[in-house]
Amino acid sequence: MGIDTAADERLAGRLAELRVQRGWTLEELARRADVSRSTLSRVERAEVSPTAALLGRLCAVYGRTMSRLLAEVESAPARLVRAGDQRIWRDEETGFVRRSVSPPHGSLRAEMIEGRLPAGADLGYDRPSVPGLEHHLWVLEGRLELTVDGEPQLLAAGDCLRFVGGATRFHNPGPEGVRYALVVVEP
Image (tube, rainbow, N blue to C red; front, side, top):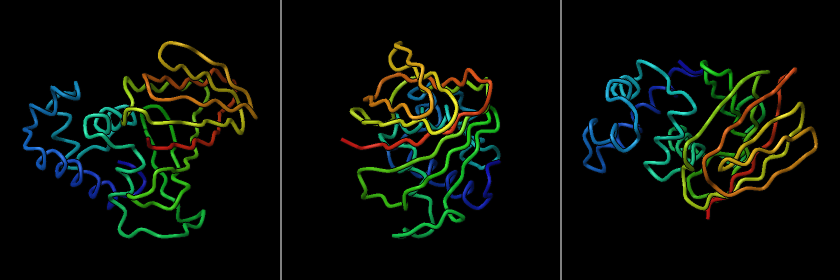
């Protein structure tokens, strides 16, 4: 499970709600997201916390950014979120840590995220969660190999890359962890 069990349960409930709103069975969602029905069932029952890659696939199917989905399960939107209160989500499989820096609110078009990947970590998304989604990635510490639509870019501390959607792969070639800021802007 992720950091906050109650939040994991709210996320599971929201994912199930999104599926039901569309009138989809688990089988239909499994086909659309290219994920097994049993995995989706376990996620919707909060038996397991979804990986970043799985959340990325579900966000793409539901036409939402990951931050928007996570904001939808926040108990109440706020104008200010103190550092100690910012939502942190971990992908135990890859070691990826995602901090939602921006105050969560479903009507915002831009959001700021801090990402951390340990040395050697590899994280891929096969499609954007929202078509036309604009990203500005600024490496704060370490190095990151970011591949967008098959085109790799090696980024070092201080480098900033702007890209729009597409299949992405985040790889930390090491030897130390990488920390980056990501600003995501919806079209």
